[in-house]
Length: 508
Image 1 (tube, rainbow, N blue to C red):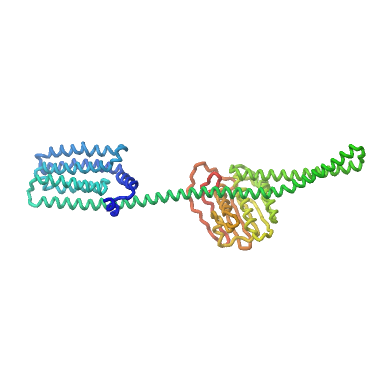
Image 2: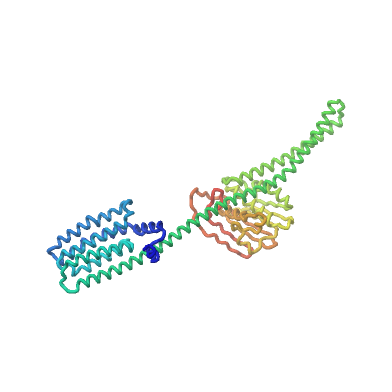
């Protein structure tokens, strides 16, 4: 039987799905169902007027029966659905609500004189109410039909019809009403089951998608962090290489000074110190101290610059800073790496530009763009020029241009360079997240937009437009999603700033 019902679409093979569907089907729009049940009780009692017209002598008895059914069954059944504990039995409550008045209706017609000559109309009204206003499944409706028709047939066997053939007419009309109601309720249940299946499939697919998206974001977060550490690691390598020179010179100078000092000390102890030896020794020590101080100062400046840049890149805090000095400090940490690769860096920055923004995010953007130019712009090992220019583009706007004279970006890649995981050097360890980080930081944390233009063999130019002061975004405030549109204008790709939900690192 279960297999047959499953094939007909009237039962789910999975018991969990079946229970979930029955609960949802029987309790869907419960307030409307309860209102219909109250209306049904009122209509059932109101038909006492019909009883009075048919048989005025016995209508008080039928009115009592109708009121008794309403007060003892119909209204209590309606009220029972107000308690959550009773809702698990909702289908049984609906069935009792339908069967009891349906069977008592046959007793009422038996008590009325010519009642069964008009019984079909009353039964059809009950069938119509049950099949249209109550959420009965086909199985429950079939039980209702069987029980009420059996009671009707038994009661009618004791009745005397005024006209011959009315027994057949009544049962034929009621039978057709049952058949139509069973078809309507069955079709409604099949449609409801299909909708339930579709919604469940969509819900499960959504859960799988959300799980996959969560895993993807977690993996992306790890890769983004690795990319940031890799960029910082390259800065460390460059700074370490640059620091090695002044430290080495300072070490050599201190060694030479130690030798000169030992020579003077020996001459003093032997009493053979000459004026010329003293003058020459002091001159060498003075020159050594000058070189030592100069090289150690240079090393200290590099360490301080790198320390500030590293702190900025590791922190997402917002602060006010002067752009020119900050940019010089940042470029001093990138300079060693640029020079080691044989490139030249030019910096042009308008004076007295005060930013109220996130220096860590801006440092990450400029560092990534510079490192991206060094790695991808000159694959053949030739030297080039990296140009960084910053100026006001309006009363409260800043424009930063980072350009190189490398090989450029092919036109077919222009629309994809900011996509996550897009890279042409995956075989050499690139993750394809550097420019994706840049795009998200510019769009979300810095609240600006970035424009890319490039020609094959003609270099690449990134233009960043930023507000001088970023707006405060309250924690937990959800931004309405927008669609990011990328407009390809020949060799120029314009990327408007979308609303991106930042994570703890300011990245998408």
